[in-house]
Length: 150
Image (cartoon, rainbow, N blue to C red; front, top):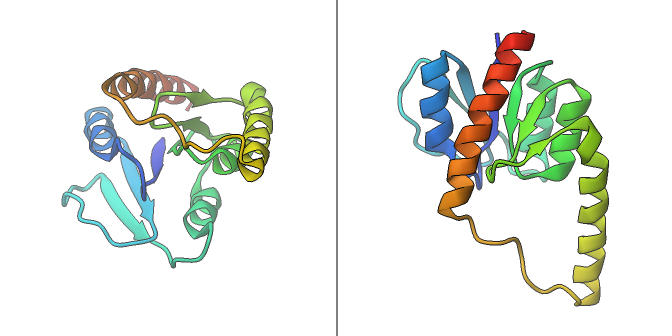
Protein backbone atom coordinates (compact mmCIF):
# COMPACT_ATOMS: atom_id res chain seq x y z
CA UNK A 1 0.00 0.00 0.00
CA UNK A 2 1.17 3.50 -0.86
CA UNK A 3 1.50 5.92 2.06
CA UNK A 4 1.94 9.69 1.94
CA UNK A 5 4.34 11.33 4.38
CA UNK A 6 4.17 15.09 4.80
CA UNK A 7 6.94 17.27 6.21
CA UNK A 8 4.13 19.23 7.80
CA UNK A 9 5.65 22.10 9.78
CA UNK A 10 5.54 24.65 6.96
CA UNK A 11 3.55 22.76 4.35
CA UNK A 12 0.90 25.03 2.74
CA UNK A 13 -1.00 22.18 1.06
CA UNK A 14 -1.86 19.87 3.98
CA UNK A 15 -5.63 20.11 3.44
CA UNK A 16 -5.29 19.36 -0.26
CA UNK A 17 -3.12 16.31 0.45
CA UNK A 18 -5.69 14.96 2.92
CA UNK A 19 -8.58 15.39 0.47
CA UNK A 20 -6.74 13.76 -2.45
CA UNK A 21 -5.48 10.89 -0.27
CA UNK A 22 -8.98 10.19 1.00
CA UNK A 23 -10.26 10.05 -2.57
CA UNK A 24 -7.59 7.45 -3.41
CA UNK A 25 -7.90 5.56 -0.13
CA UNK A 26 -4.34 6.34 0.97
CA UNK A 27 -2.98 6.92 4.46
CA UNK A 28 -1.39 10.30 5.25
CA UNK A 29 1.14 10.79 8.03
CA UNK A 30 1.79 14.41 8.96
CA UNK A 31 5.19 14.67 10.65
CA UNK A 32 5.85 17.82 12.66
CA UNK A 33 7.90 19.31 15.48
CA UNK A 34 4.82 20.76 17.21
CA UNK A 35 1.31 19.53 17.84
CA UNK A 36 -1.30 20.69 15.33
CA UNK A 37 -5.00 20.05 15.00
CA UNK A 38 -5.95 17.60 12.27
CA UNK A 39 -9.34 16.15 11.37
CA UNK A 40 -10.20 12.89 13.13
CA UNK A 41 -10.13 10.66 10.05
CA UNK A 42 -9.00 7.04 9.79
CA UNK A 43 -6.60 7.80 6.96
CA UNK A 44 -4.82 10.63 8.83
CA UNK A 45 -2.10 10.32 11.45
CA UNK A 46 -0.08 12.97 13.24
CA UNK A 47 3.45 12.24 14.42
CA UNK A 48 5.05 14.87 16.65
CA UNK A 49 8.81 14.48 16.99
CA UNK A 50 11.11 16.29 19.41
CA UNK A 51 12.34 19.72 18.41
CA UNK A 52 15.85 18.60 17.49
CA UNK A 53 17.15 19.76 14.11
CA UNK A 54 16.13 17.29 11.35
CA UNK A 55 14.07 15.10 13.72
CA UNK A 56 11.06 15.17 11.42
CA UNK A 57 13.27 14.42 8.41
CA UNK A 58 14.93 11.51 10.20
CA UNK A 59 11.54 10.07 11.21
CA UNK A 60 10.25 10.26 7.64
CA UNK A 61 13.37 8.61 6.20
CA UNK A 62 13.18 5.86 8.80
CA UNK A 63 9.54 5.03 7.94
CA UNK A 64 9.26 5.70 4.21
CA UNK A 65 9.28 2.74 1.80
CA UNK A 66 9.60 2.21 -1.94
CA UNK A 67 6.79 3.94 -3.88
CA UNK A 68 5.58 5.87 -0.85
CA UNK A 69 5.08 9.58 -1.50
CA UNK A 70 6.82 12.33 0.46
CA UNK A 71 5.68 15.95 0.28
CA UNK A 72 8.44 18.34 1.30
CA UNK A 73 10.30 21.42 0.10
CA UNK A 74 13.39 20.18 1.98
CA UNK A 75 15.91 19.22 -0.70
CA UNK A 76 18.25 17.11 1.48
CA UNK A 77 15.19 15.22 2.77
CA UNK A 78 14.03 14.72 -0.81
CA UNK A 79 17.42 13.25 -1.70
CA UNK A 80 17.37 10.86 1.27
CA UNK A 81 13.84 9.67 0.43
CA UNK A 82 14.65 9.16 -3.25
CA UNK A 83 17.51 6.86 -2.20
CA UNK A 84 14.92 4.69 -0.44
CA UNK A 85 12.80 4.48 -3.60
CA UNK A 86 10.13 6.96 -2.54
CA UNK A 87 8.52 9.53 -4.78
CA UNK A 88 9.03 13.13 -3.67
CA UNK A 89 6.97 16.18 -4.47
CA UNK A 90 7.43 19.78 -3.30
CA UNK A 91 4.38 21.82 -2.24
CA UNK A 92 4.84 23.93 -5.39
CA UNK A 93 4.32 20.87 -7.58
CA UNK A 94 7.97 20.26 -8.38
CA UNK A 95 8.67 16.53 -8.66
CA UNK A 96 12.12 15.51 -7.46
CA UNK A 97 13.68 12.53 -9.24
CA UNK A 98 16.97 10.64 -9.05
CA UNK A 99 17.91 12.35 -12.33
CA UNK A 100 17.20 15.89 -11.09
CA UNK A 101 18.17 15.82 -7.42
CA UNK A 102 21.92 16.24 -8.01
CA UNK A 103 21.38 19.51 -9.88
CA UNK A 104 18.90 20.68 -7.24
CA UNK A 105 21.37 19.95 -4.41
CA UNK A 106 24.13 21.78 -6.29
CA UNK A 107 21.90 24.81 -6.90
CA UNK A 108 20.96 24.81 -3.22
CA UNK A 109 24.64 24.83 -2.22
CA UNK A 110 25.42 27.69 -4.61
CA UNK A 111 22.46 29.72 -3.32
CA UNK A 112 23.54 29.13 0.28
CA UNK A 113 27.04 30.34 -0.56
CA UNK A 114 25.69 33.46 -2.31
CA UNK A 115 23.49 34.19 0.72
CA UNK A 116 26.55 33.93 2.98
CA UNK A 117 28.33 36.44 0.76
CA UNK A 118 25.33 38.77 0.88
CA UNK A 119 24.72 38.53 -2.86
CA UNK A 120 21.29 36.99 -2.38
CA UNK A 121 19.22 38.53 0.37
CA UNK A 122 15.71 37.25 -0.37
CA UNK A 123 14.10 33.91 0.30
CA UNK A 124 11.98 31.73 -1.93
CA UNK A 125 9.17 33.21 -3.99
CA UNK A 126 5.83 33.50 -2.17
CA UNK A 127 3.45 30.57 -2.50
CA UNK A 128 0.81 31.39 -5.12
CA UNK A 129 -2.53 30.05 -6.31
CA UNK A 130 -0.91 28.55 -9.41
CA UNK A 131 1.54 26.64 -7.15
CA UNK A 132 -1.43 25.03 -5.39
CA UNK A 133 -3.04 24.13 -8.72
CA UNK A 134 0.22 22.67 -10.09
CA UNK A 135 0.70 20.74 -6.85
CA UNK A 136 -2.75 19.14 -7.07
CA UNK A 137 -2.16 18.07 -10.66
CA UNK A 138 1.28 16.63 -9.91
CA UNK A 139 0.10 14.93 -6.71
CA UNK A 140 -2.55 13.08 -8.67
CA UNK A 141 0.03 12.08 -11.31
CA UNK A 142 2.49 10.87 -8.65
CA UNK A 143 -0.23 8.88 -6.86
CA UNK A 144 -1.31 7.23 -10.10
CA UNK A 145 2.30 6.30 -10.91
CA UNK A 146 2.88 4.92 -7.42
CA UNK A 147 -0.31 2.86 -7.53
CA UNK A 148 0.63 1.43 -10.94
CA UNK A 149 4.13 0.54 -9.70
CA UNK A 150 2.87 -0.92 -6.42
